[in-house]
Image 1 (cartoon, rainbow, N blue to C red):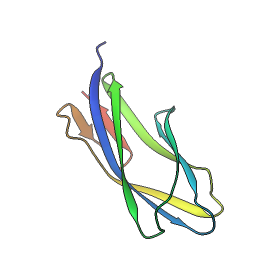
Image 2 (cartoon, helix red, strand yellow; image 1 turned 30 degrees about the vertical axis):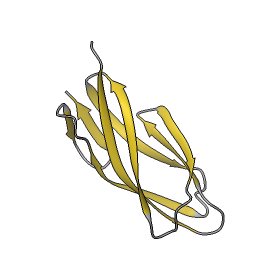
Image 3 (cartoon, one colour; image 1 turned 120 degrees about the horizontal axis):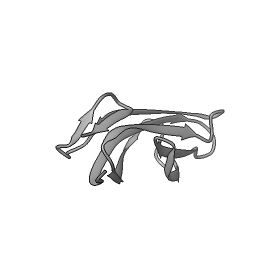
Image 4 (cartoon, rainbow, N blue to C red; image 1 turned 180 degrees about the vertical axis):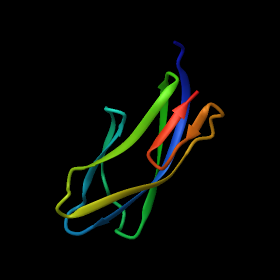
Length: 95
């Protein structure tokens, strides 16, 4: 099965108090990145990921490492690759 390069983008929001929260981004069960949120609690960032993937369904998941003081929400998953179908804010399919 051949793989292809795709770019996935989504908006990430965080409500937090106290120290800067830390989060991880996974695609299916593979860790893509771990970051510290440095934006204000009313701001959002655009996460950009470049992936080399086989055809199939993929789920983007945020793991909150500071759940006592923060809450993350992801929205607006999109891709400009013609072979990517967006299913919802968390799931995409590569055909």
